[in-house]
Length: 107
Image (cartoon, rainbow, N blue to C red; front, side):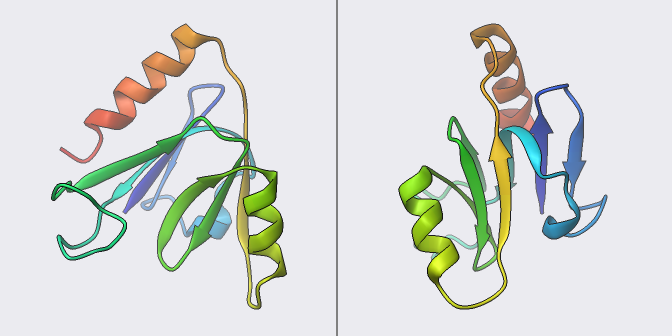
């Protein structure tokens, strides 16, 4: 499960469709199920995890990751279908508001 918050305050969650169906631009923060406690991407037994603050978001192996241009370039050169969303800068007050909502999502 995941939920994506966009620059205009709208959201797209797993209930709305698959990751590839989400709008491709204006991502500010993504909250997602952290997976099992044995998952190597989750630390401290977190149940939910957020990613934010980057130019690009990629979906790989069932998780969203935030990345820069170098990471995006590496991702697109690997074999297989790709899901990529573009991030967007917002003023700090908007960023903090959306991060706060994302931190509470899923609880």
